[in-house]
Image (cartoon, rainbow, N blue to C red; front, side, top):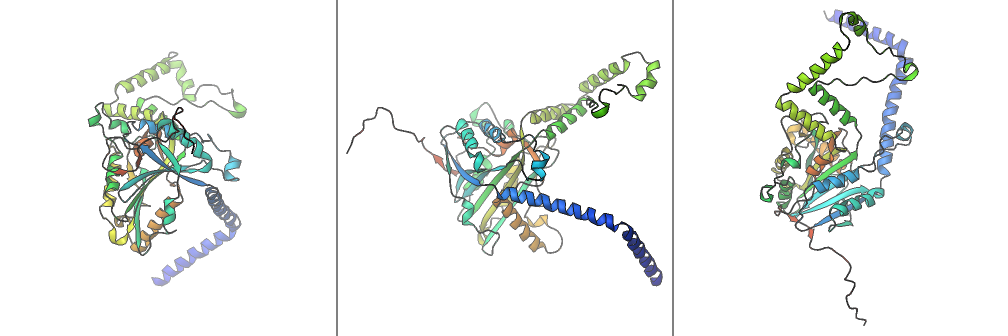
Length: 429
């Protein structure tokens, strides 16, 4: 029996080698070409990312902010201005040009919360104008990077780090729960979605730090087209057929073979009438859930959007690690989730929790995940998994807390800086 199996194995090996001897001169160049192309794209991305000159701006807001996250929507809309609406292939695959990205950050340390924007140098002026336009009494100042006080790589024997990135659970055209669901005409009943995170940062003690980074990159209308297709499917509306292009443009007979066969047996216009009646019937038979889903999709795709990466990091001394920090962060994100539309979930490839890693060398793999997550935060790297959020969803995830949020030691300015009045007396020494 053993000799028979060895003979079969040798026969298969000889067949494979014989086949390879005929195709190697085609297969090897193709494999090499694919590998070269992947390395070339990585090289272009690294070169582009290293060419960015980052500026870290701290935003200090006045006390008793009365504006809703609607104001933050306008800031995110201004951040979409650098979008190119499609980079030319030569610029993309030879020069390595990419759509610019930036990061909105909240850093909690020693019971205080600080709001930052990490932006490429050439986009700083545009963003400052947008912030002052919505918050005229705010202060936007360039500050030293707080990451410079930390080593290049974490964790170390003394300092531990943990966290995760969030991605959409379902299709990009389905929305998450936004701040509009938390609003109420009565101010006392109005809820601020950022309040749980502010409360969590207010509880930090000693050397504990909590970092929240929202990396955004402008995107086009691909998710919009997918959403329109889904809405048409729910409504029972057929998508319009593309007109013929190229050499045969204008030469199409305009009818299908089925229509030609049925023509002698049907009255003109019967097919069109049937389609219209079917579409009306589908709209009439829509369930309340289908109607809500179609309206929610239409609302999301109506606003400009970004590829977004929400990222959380908890940095502290190993002796001071709070095991309840990660569940609390997950609880903050859960408030934006719905059962019938969309939700945010932790990306399993970035989560540093012990339960997320199975198999051998568990401690080594968790440590490697922590290092990669820290490097992604430090280098402002967008996630490879493209989750698309519109400006309403982004304003839900990141905005300045309202006056109702008073639990945190949020650093605010007490008054606006300005020049002295024109008629003030001047005394010369």
